[in-house]
Image (tube, rainbow, N blue to C red; front, side):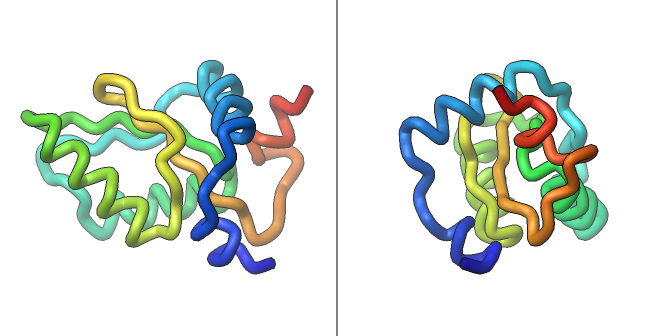
Length: 111
């Protein structure tokens, strides 16, 4: 199964719960502010997802609708999935093509 196929599948409830548990310990690695989702932000989120697989992103928008639209755009553009969204923080997941045990949050925080 390729990374694209894996990220297009829905996460199970059990996987979501596990990722939320791991995500609780993470700090946001990307902050999206006034300039929105531009190429630099896209590249940084893409790099972070490839390295860490599970990341927190802080999104500073004025409305909930704008935030929801931005999350959908990120997920569609980068073949990622939104695991959880609370306040300004969104937890994103995308399987890496090749997991690095020193960088992957899924491997580092494994039970």
